[in-house]
Image (tube, rainbow, N blue to C red):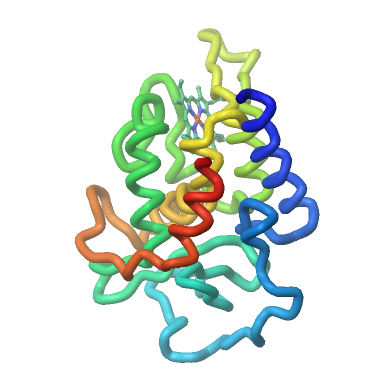
Length: 193
Ligand code: HEC
């Protein structure tokens, strides 16, 4: 079981190295020739400073290929991944990092930490954890590399926190979201198996 789960993290890290940052299991890899980016098209336009360069199966990515949010309707409507990230954040991270990524006495604000943090760096911390040896109190960010409830939703959590960090998604649950893409459900099933 444990080995199998490590395998999932391994695939994700291999994906990171290969530059396909937001695909999960190998069998859910995108086609060899992705469709031409539709930069500038109306449905790609998002509120907030980070503009998506591409959308595939309801997942938005920026010009560097990092996952990003798509927020419309005066901050009210978010893409599915932002919504999913909100839910996963609340299940796995809130206990230490506080509601809405605001931080706590134990763990830093992720609204601040995500500023300028690219997806590869973020994923490295989540998979491997982080330990501040210099702090007066020992602060430990656990490694989630063998936790599917986090590993299978890493781009989602990153996307949500990025939207929080960019100030485009407020505190509390987003009120509306784009539909859950069929591709998301398929990748989720494959990853959680
Ligand atoms: C058991 C408590 C705990 C949980 C649960 C936890 N973290 Fe952390 N996290 C920490 C601590 C403590 C630090 C600071 C470690 C340090 O300073 O070295 C940290 C650091 C981080 C950092 C680096 C921040 C920076 O400034 O470099 C990121 C990113 C992060 N956590 C994301 C997450 C995410 C996403 C989740 C949920 C999947 C999560 N954490 C769950 C305690 C936790």
